[in-house]
Length: 296
Image (cartoon, rainbow, N blue to C red; front, side, top):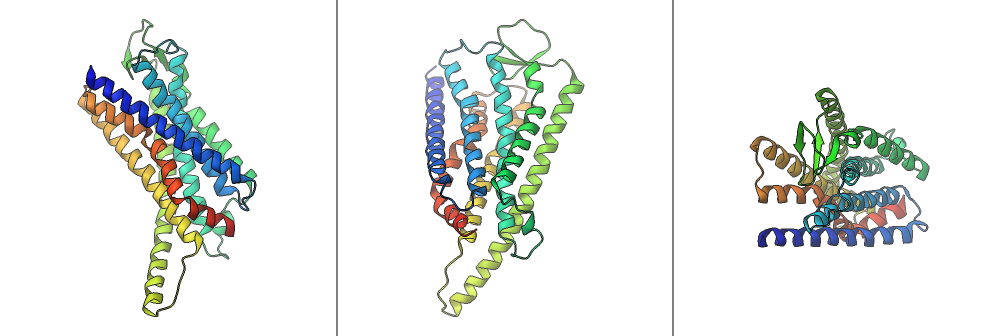
């Protein structure tokens, strides 16, 4: 009982810390959005922060209130919040990938054909973000029909959490949506990996160039886009760590066929870990990202 209370207090504290961090970054981004010369990267970051807040509200706060006994809103309609949680997870993947790809295009040579593919206006970025919302809303829409509250008497159900259930009405439909989710993740992770690999290649060339200049005793200052690429790679590595750890832990729990309390708590933290940590990564690297936008 005491251990459960400690776990819930820690989870509540981390969720609150993540929400406050995201709100702080969101407020600062909105405050300077109007004076930023290039708004594309800033808009992507604002959307990422909003996605983080959506993740923490749909997962962290809902879980914490339920475990503290506030179950009034967790009826059949309340359990549909799991739909928002699934949508926010997909949006997080898509938005982080878009940020990585845009930064990779920025680092292309000025006369490169790839650089011309970079979205340059706010409307182009908004079009991509709208596409992400439509895509993830459709991929996750099976939860609107299949998730029910614990209080309902149903058969052939699999427990998702201690207050909501997933009703398997059709294995075909279930596997279809799972296939769409896996395909989405594979495509966007592949694009993220390709863009990140290109940035690592550019950073390696830059490092070799810096070493050459240091041997020549020439004063050299790294351009802002190099520092911005390092910031984006830090954010991408943060996402990749929590994504892969969450997948591994979920597979472990699936094949274990029984829930170990500590393992379940760890898996739930990994689900929201990126939303908690990423704003503080942005706060730490914000000067580099801002500097890159001023020169573009």
